[in-house]
Image 1 (spheres, rainbow, N blue to C red):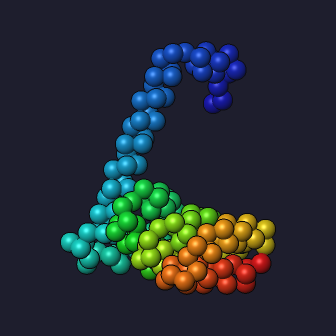
Image 2 (tube, one colour):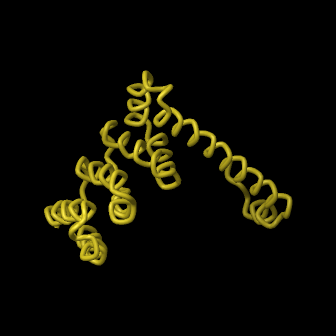
Length: 167
C-alpha cells in the first residue's frame, strides 16, 4: 500500500524518524562490517583453507558476496588485500565495474598487492569503453615515468599495454 503524501511528509520530518533511521543505518553498517570480517577471515585465515573452494563458489554465485569482497579489498591491510585480490581471480569474478579501484591498487600499492590487482584486471571479461580505457591510461601515464625502471614499472607497463588493447 503506497504511503499518502502527508503521511510521508510527517514521517520524513519527524525527529524520531531521523533517530530511527540513524540507528538502522548504524545497525546495518555494523552487520555489514561483521559480514566483511567473516569473509576476510574465511579467505585470509589459513585455518579455513579446506573451505576455500566453497567460499570461492559463494563469491561467484552471490552478487552481494562479491560486492562485500570489493568493500573488504578497499579497507583491508596489505597482506589481507593481497589474499582478497587473489580470491577475485580464483573465483573468476568479473570485476570490470570496479576496474578503477583495481587500477588504483596497481598504481599505488606495493608490488605483491599490485601484481594481484593486475592479475584480476587481466581476468576481467566485461566490456570497458574506449573513453574509460583512455581515462585510466592518462592516470597511469602520470605515475609511470617515476617507476619506469622498477619492478612496479613493469606492472604498470603491462597495464598500459592491456588498456591500449581495450582502446
